[in-house]
Image 1: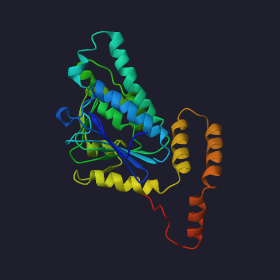
Image 2: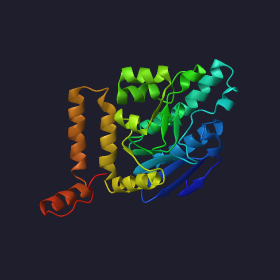
Image 3: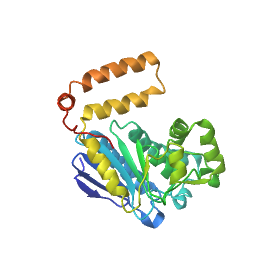
Image 4: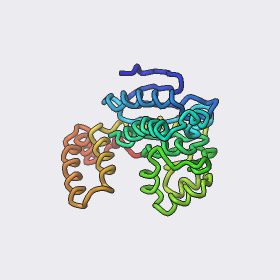
Length: 265
């Protein structure tokens, strides 16, 4: 298990009060993902999934960029389809593990979230963006296809038609456009974005792990399930959630007209 503060070659990690923060740290490349970062991400994300003390994960990037995508310079090493596929499979493991993480993820996007960087941001349940955030499905500029789960995540957020437009046009869109499409939760000044992410995470961390995990898992199952299956999951989830000490205390506070512990984000 990782220590509460950890730094590798291309990422930084910290944990405090049930909140983990994973920061991409290759500012000289605008946090482009290379083979070293892929390996380090896989190791840290595996530990995060196993650490049940963590209730919320924050994703961020250093140096005025979230992630500019894959490191194009390192792609010249993938000169066969087999090597290119292996490269993708290793990164897809990280994406799958983040999408299936049974705890909320907050992405703090300041600067570029291009290509794979946008895919990484879309693994988050809540995306904060600074006014200088820029998003782009840039894959086709290099004759590539979208990756990092974009074919799965983006149509579920913006709809299939807009997802195709963004992919084929490779147009850049800003924080306000991303918010209008439902990608971004809120726009925050760049000097405040990490503080706001931490504030949101701390509020969410007050909630019981069972409620956080069940809410995310049931939502994740919703688009591939029937109405009957979802109603049954809802009933079982509510049975567990309403037996927690947090719920019992909150119900008591509500009846007695006292402030609730969690008042929303």
